Length: 424
Ligand code: SF4
Ligand code: SF4
Image (cartoon, rainbow, N blue to C red; front, top):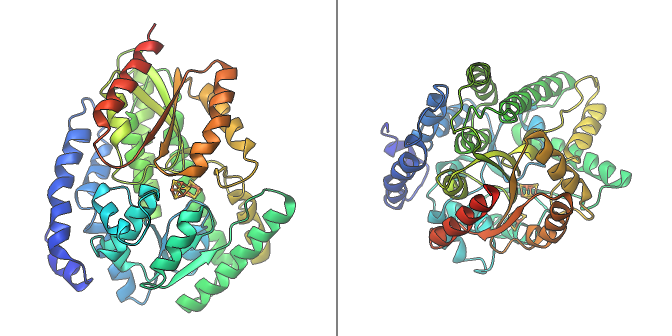
């Protein structure tokens, strides 16, 4: 890893505490990733991104700021990056996926808050993540209760703008979301001093759509009988999509897809024929949460799809690129984003339809409904998910977990038993 110590000090980070994270991450990455056999060569790029995750991209963001640009930190796939990029600013994901940050969050949040929220708050307040230090403004949303209150706490330390996401999907709710996006555009313009014109917005809509298309192409290779890439690697790519420069990410992902498509043609698989194909559905798996994928793929299964925000919910459906005025473009954005099916909506039947459709498309043998501990929304929605899967005759295993390793052994036993059951 290059020496970024000075940069971290200048960011006001707690460098000593951060050293502890730097000390464990390479080992964890090596164990989960570098131990895999027959990885696509195109993964070298993503390996490099992770190896210097707190160096390369943060340095680019700082360079952008030194030229007068702004950086917005986001936490949810409903927040439209297109608006940010159209104002010559950069959007970067901020969701925390490591147990390292959880105790910091627990200093100010109830213990029974989901680990994603606790880690995100801890990463900011403990000053141990450069991305959380760099972002000039955080953009929150009114999705779940834990997040809503977390914005108020974070707002005491950093500018936070909150988008009011409707929680139903009637025509008037789509309209309300369009209005929220218009208000967000005004805020971004005011904060950056740059105007969002129709021309710039058209360009950023294309940019983010191209990223979606690259991810769609990647996921398409996972639908094939031959499995050209492990679930772990695909998850890593989905996680990096939230941080990386969108144009470069798209280019590198398309290059990887060339290789994966070739693998499919040549019958090159990362797992033996007949390995049980698993889909995960549930709460997001923020970087570096690779726990369950690793357990599944070292217990005789392979993950071929994630119906998650770090998965299909991030890239499915494109924004209409044909609109010519800012108002029409905002409407198109609202329509696309409101097609995402998060459990914070009621009713949320669209998600059940998605899960059943994806199970067919990816030819899955079994599904794991995976929810972060204390996520009431997804946990409760599990009732409908599991019922629908049982009715469809698709085996399902329900899992509730957090970022600690304390349940790893127990999870391994349950996952192995599930895969064993699929094998018979
Ligand atoms: S699970 Fe819901 S609240 Fe969380 S990132 Fe996804 S859409 Fe946003
Ligand atoms: S996982 Fe659940 S509780 Fe956690 S932030 Fe997402 S919706 Fe909220």
